[in-house]
Each structure stands twice: as structure tokens, then as C-alpha cells.
Picture (cartoon, rainbow, N blue to C red):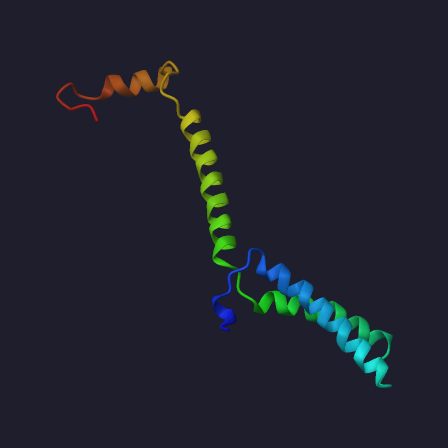
Length: 110
């Protein structure tokens, strides 16, 4: 079975959880065989192994698409705010009228 093709949702979080369980199993197995690592080493193994596994495991395609969809939605909100701020329904200011009066009549309107 090729695990690189296995696409679980939230597979990085799943890897971190599995890493925590593996760390606990390693600690329990060492204690049962009489090899006590000590409190600091046990804590270090539990603290560092799960995030390391979560960093190594790539995100699933489903998680990447969720992230992209969120970014597209945020960009849409931003574009909506920008277009609402530049709404052309507001009356022109005096400065805009003065600038328009300086434009020669032969210049085509954009």
C-alpha cells in the first residue's frame, strides 16, 4: 500500500496525534523493559515528536483546496470593498470639475 497517495482530510493533524500516541508507546515500552529515560526526556519526546511529524507530513489536496477557497473568498471581499469605495455615483468634487475643464474638447473621453 502506497501511503503517499493516501489523502486524509487534516492529515497533518492526524500525523501529530499519531505521533503523540507513538511517543507514549515508546515511553511505556522503555519503562516496561526497565529503561527509564527520566521525566525531562519523556516530556521532550512528547513535546517534539508530534509537531515534527506534522511538519514532515504534507497537507492533503482537500486541505490545500480549502485554503485556496478561503483566500479567494477573502480576495472577493477585498475587491467588493474597493469597488464600493470607488463608486462613481458620488457627485464630482470641485477639483475634478476644474481638472475636467482643462482637458481640450478634441481629446476623446476614456
